[in-house]
Length: 117
Length: 111
Image (cartoon, rainbow over all chains, first blue to last red; front, side):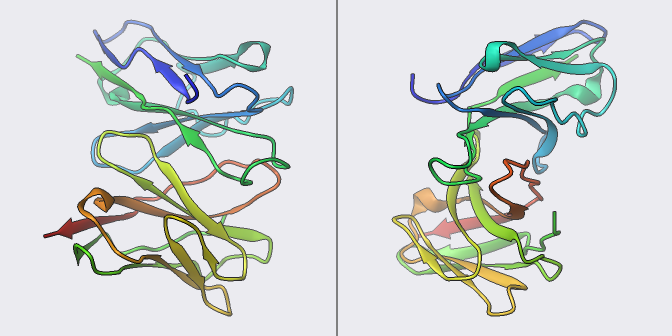
């Protein structure tokens, strides 16, 4: 499809298990972002990838969270030893290089809803 | 990035203009004002952005005060489908920096 694709759309896991969330950005977009949104809350920035530069990991809440982006395209967000407070919707977004399109415009996926029991 | 302040909620009658305010008194000269909205259970959607001048597109108009310390997003003829949370964000563009979303304004459009 033409939009940002995320999988799985829903994930239920037990406390202590590891989970992986996947994001396929829009083809050609150089920037990729992960956010999370807890119930009734605003978006919380997690991590940002831009081309081949080192990622901005300043939003990751703990060392249980990590993300990688392979080949400048697909990204995987990994949460190790999940806790109940990790329950949230995890949103991925991509954006084109700043010289094209509308600078700063992020295109969001539908999110992956994670529930930790 | 500068912090923004928005009312937590607003109501608007269908067909009327919805005017959503945002205060960003600490905005710096190279920061743009962005507006996004999030309809229930969907990812946020870009609406409009601007630096100094007022902007208009097919979705909305953005009015920025001369001192740039506040702005207003205008939906000229609100419909029920415009019911959503609206986020006002200020950020430097051109550097592909991240956008920091607050809690936004929940707009309820009613019949």
